[in-house]
Amino acid sequence: MDEKIAKKILDETIGQIFRYQNPLSLEQAMLQFAFDVRLPQQVYDVKTNQPTWTASMGQNRYATMQGMQKMIEGDGNMRPARNLTNLQDVLGAWNEINFTSTDRQIGSKNVAESDGVYHSDGVYRSVDIRKSNNILFSDGVDGCDHVVAGQTSKRCNFVVRVEDSKDIVNSFNIIWSSKIANSMFIQDCYDLDECLFCSNIAGKRFCIANMQYEEAEYRRIKDIVARWVLQSA
View 1 (cartoon, one colour):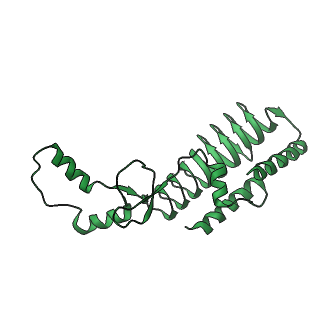
View 2 (cartoon, rainbow, N blue to C red):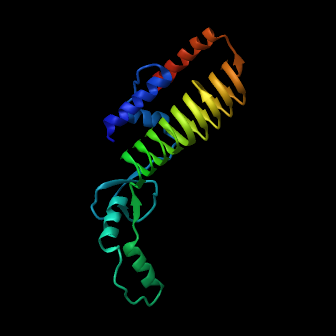
View 3 (tube, one colour):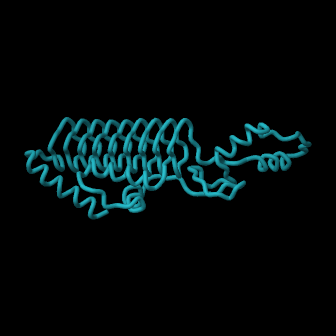
């Protein structure tokens, strides 16, 4: 994973949702869509002084998970026993060997600038990603594909800005909702397809601000909204 591949994921996701070519750089997309998402921060490996990424800020010393694994495989990361006469001795010994692991990933590939990635492929600048592919600027997504700025959501595909939701497809800015498709700006809803700016409704199609429209008028307004989102970005 590098910035070129991450940009391709962003372009594919934006194109699928808005049906327009993505006008945003990676940095612009992060600032516009992930401004409230907890993202990994850059720190430095205490042993190599190389940059690395962590979700655990406020710690004293960091070391990459890969570096720590090499130490364990070498001598088991054990030290000769020594006399510990008081609490200060114990805390001092603890401080000598206590490193916070960074760049943590298990069973994953194509991961960059991320921490806490499990059984995933194609993850960039994200935290706590599980069984997902093609994820950018996200925190806590599970079973997702092509998600930008996702938070605590499951089974979402081609979504930008999704929070506390599941089973979302081809949508933008979805909060606390489920079974939403081809929609934008939805909150506290269930089972919607092709809806805009709706809240606390279920089982609807072609609605805008909880009002029912004919398909042609709905699509005219949706195009205006799509162009507005991308232009304002």
